[in-house]
Length: 161
Image (cartoon, rainbow, N blue to C red):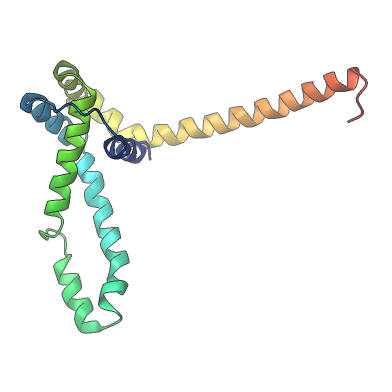
């Protein structure tokens, strides 16, 4: 989940005006390497089949002969994904290259390339879910306690609640 938010956030940065400065080819190369290490393309690859399956009824119009050809065209390994995947990787790399210095890109990539970084990536969705649950629980408990305290304080001031 958090990696999905990361991907969406980066794409929003791109759309809504990441820095206008053009990064150096070296920075773009380091950023591409980071995007690969972060396995962002894998997330995108996982989303494309779902998108194409949603398009199937619209394109095929309940015609079995079209459905068969459509299914063959979108089969895993199909080149239909390649231009979109490459464009996404280039755009993500550009955003990272505009956001971080070359040295920062190298440091970030070095961390995520190590086992601890890979484990962090692997566990990040579960950690994000656990963190969200902890935050919701803490907020609920705080709201209940604050409501009780504030109600009592207002009653002591003579308000009828």
